[in-house]
Picture (cartoon, one colour):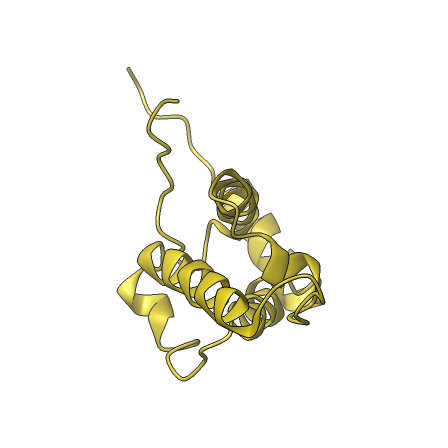
Length: 112
């Protein structure tokens, strides 16, 4: 398998980052804590569950820009980290839509 390249979440790349991070977690068998909404499945031991949760949380932390890290600095569960990031970056508010429209209108083609 080729090396996976994931740009760090910087607040402007949530959609792409989210998709790549979900793929990364699946490829490394660390997806269960997100799929199960943070609830331990009955077929896993407590120790294995805690290890998987911490590995998934560590994986996410590795792909966060320093400017974003403070948002989740106090969270230890991967599900809590994910929900906090979603709450900040996946909002469909009028403000976010206006910001995206402004970026789109100001988009310029670079020569070359």
